[in-house]
Image (cartoon, rainbow, N blue to C red; front, side, top):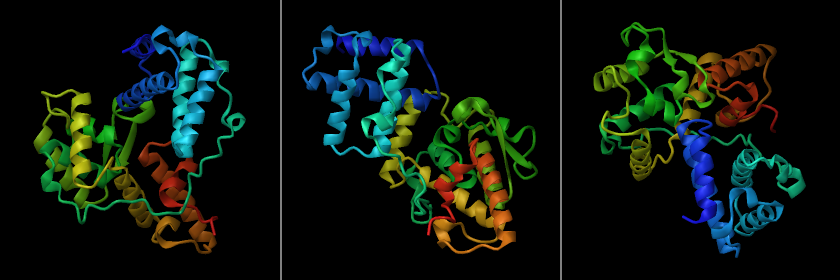
Length: 296
């Protein structure tokens, strides 16, 4: 670890903003940026984070563009650089994305990005990871939420077959937002019963394992069976829930058509409901999962 990386690591250790996953991704990216600057010829062993300047940002951006890194990934990387710039007191060092010619990211594509477990062999997953995946499938949980999930807390004193909702603890969720998700199917109750039987009063992270270690194992096991980061299960939940609430498929699944006045009203209510259940505070985000009726 050279001087620049050491300094970045020190800043990260003193500023634990965001979830564990966010912190881990931020550290990985910022360390990679230091390596890329070193490869570009900068003497990073003699640099402190406060020595970073606009020319270093331009060098990184040119490298990413030459490597044909996607717009979404570049925006994520710029976000992490802005975080670092803010911590070193140089928030004005990095301009807005438009200044760098970074095009707007297209979030809503009307492409079905859902993943189903129908052809996935969950028997190849270890018990705690399998139950987390089952809960993601049943409730549309984020990966971190499904790993930290404590059935006894989530059920709030109820048993799985009488509980009306599950409670998502702020410390599990992105942005630290508490929320409740209704239990509407027998499959959800069965998944909760299996999780409660396995975890008891604990969580779905084995007691002898840290979150970081368990995350690494989660990533390896789900990748091995073709699930990747399992985010497609969240898409599937949103789409199934939309159909349950409206009686018709969302545009990402069924394509675009003209809606009646009643269907438009049902669409709006469903999107707000699903936004709340997924833990988002913006209604527009549901377009990522459901698609948009305005995209012909």
